[in-house]
Image 1: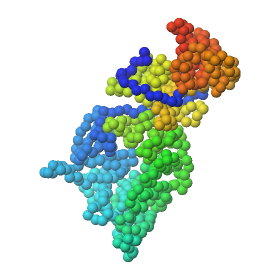
Image 2 (image 1 turned 180 degrees about the vertical axis):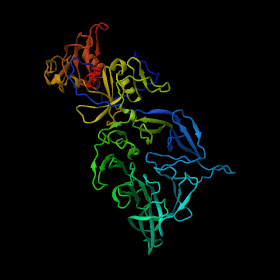
Image 3 (image 1 turned 30 degrees about the vertical axis):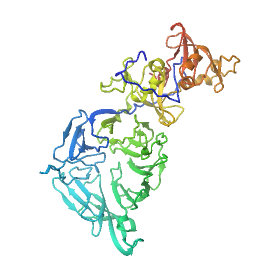
Image 4 (image 1 turned 135 degrees about the vertical axis):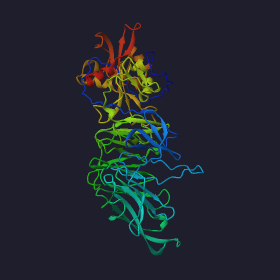
Length: 614
């Protein structure tokens, strides 16, 4: 670390890593097929700091630089770029959160004489195609538990009118069409006293009928669209229903869910899907204490994520409205180790249906509709919020600070030098020698494996690379003498760090070993006990290379030897050196350095050059 020039001097915590790899330079590397590289997904912190991590955010349709949240009775606006905090004025401010419905922020009424703010009618739904149309749907405590009230505003909350359900029914749930501001859907319940009593003999039994109605005139008139459920119970244990537009859909595709009306953890939600505007529904999943079902429209398909406590999440999609489901080649997953992570979810934006975010205990992103995936850096358990604005970005709140992830920037050239990080970034190490940086994700691993002395300077940024011998992507970063890889599939209960060194020693000698070049041919076990023999690869280790191997991590650092010692011309300086290859490194004997010293070759630079022609 004698030549380390960090952007900020940080206190560094070393972790013991049980599974290793390593790297060095090779003189006659075999060609490797060109790879596609993708800039990794790294969060950019903003100056915005909230009071807690549990904050609900709204967006202003014409102000992409603002986010809104409630603090007490006040609606507060934060400027993402400057961190400026202001109290929103008393005019209506609504959110177009991805689809434009279901999330609304509004400023509240003035203080009364007793210094207590009394809320006006606060909207709960907003039309996606016309923000003047606002709806308020809430439970009315003056009636029994089945009675909800609906108000409609066609002028941005300047005036409100109440709407009523069809005769002899109660409203239970509301959804607003994303394409027509005047079209509404509701679920209703109608009750008939059977004249019978519950087994306890105290409560009357009711026959309950659940229907879906549609209105095209903001609720003035209703048409029966579908009958969805019959139920017999007391009024205390009738099912609750919820109705919403299918996430990501720009059509009147509906998701209806209902619970069984039972108390306690044994309760279960059932999910129904309609792709014909609420005329027919099909059962597509369940949810409860052990997991859930998440539905989302991606292009002309419906995706379904089913999660459970076992961590065996299933990602499927349907192109026939939920009649049949086919597996989605989802990202590489790893066992969910924390019960709080067992609930997954799907996120996307209708502006670009090919971009999908999967939260399943990790954070995965696909820019091509699920064909390929890459992991978002810092796969924390914190939820993400999709911004409706271009470029396609997501936000998260962690440790009370708002951070932004620019997904449109994920395809930048990771081999191009970057500017130094801001002075406030104490986590990133920057190296002017190469114009590259090491983020927190790889920093500890880089230092654990020896920093500049062992791995050299970074010669790329982090990016996603598809390994030629494995069908899965890895987040990697290249250094002069190594390639670091992020392996989220390893269980942290058994491994304190998920950053490993790539097996490039094997990679660059593959053709030479296949051609049976003499230094790579297996040998028999020698009689000399001073020479170590490895039956796994049938090669030996001796002298200075043996001492260096043992003192710098041994098997976990360098892997097994895959050649014997031999003389090789170094392509960097044209000189001949005694070398030996290992699975994860190449050792070189340099007699000109300090009277003779073992160094690691610049294998990372060689592999990067062969793979990407740089």
